[in-house]
Amino acid sequence: MKQFLSDFKKLVKLRLTLTVVFSASIAFLIGAKQQGDIIWINWLILTIGGFFITGSANGFNEIIERDLDKLMKRTADRPLPSGRMTTGQALVLSVFMGIFGTLLLVRLNFIAGLLSVFSIILYAFIYTPLKQKSPIAVLVGAFPGALPPLIGYYAAFKSAGFGLEYAAVSEAAIVITPLVLFAIQFVWQFPHFWAIAWVADEDYRNAGFRLLPTREKDRVSAWMIAISALLMIPVGFLPMYYGFGGWVFTAVSLLGGIMFAFYGFQHAKSMTDASARKVMFTSFFYLPLTQLVLLFDFIPF
Image 1 (cartoon, rainbow, N blue to C red):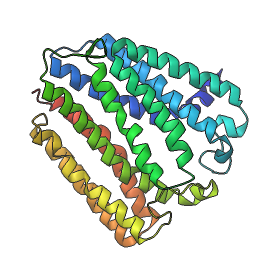
Image 2: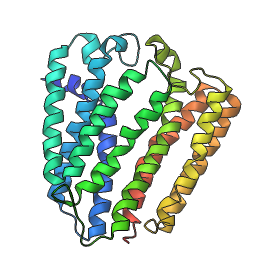
Image 3: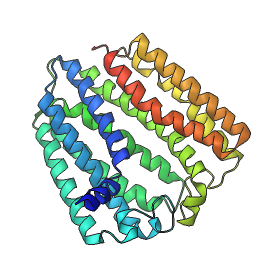
Image 4: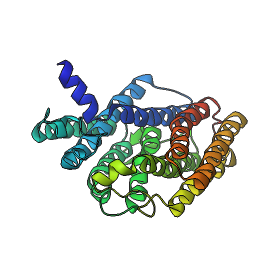
């Protein structure tokens, strides 16, 4: 049982899954605050459902890449390439998690359930095969990567047929708020994944992955990382611009964006793995920190 639990954690990519669930759960709480009432049992259902949806997508990803994972040091010990789990076992687990997670989210809200199915398809069956073919995979992968705030936000609302019940919230708010959350997480994907791709480039090459903008660790790719990091400054002002982000959130996101840009331009100059790691580590704390601050500095409108 201990070995199975260890392998299960690797199959679902536990750290990544928890990060995704955190993002969705914060968006749920923001949507609930907008309505003036947090239903905690629904938050728990979203958390469990989101975990299974993300775990399912990651499981399908590892099934598809099982032979490629054998070629990389960072993934060789995963349950499929190591032989500790069969493809059939992983498939059963992934299908079960996908169905169970979707049923939970559909129970909360039809739109949230529909988006969860779309995220699995886009991540596992479109983004994953593209990783070997073109750097555009990062752009494609940014869409499912930014869907958790949309899923979490809409899960906070009751279903009205195929729509939403939102009597306490203006139509503008129910459109603008989740789209801004989506936009911030969407833009964040690029410095985050390109920095990882730079640091892990040698390992990725062994599996045939070319995720850097030019496929190479060259000056253009380095500057693309810097520019994408710089874009975190303006997107951090979007919540205040649209009236639901306070001064505390704006100050924190501005400081985080400046740090992003500073390390990004340092990397453009030095083009080393060490400088790319600084961008990467900045991305690790920027998103959860700003999302948490936004939750407490949120202004309903």
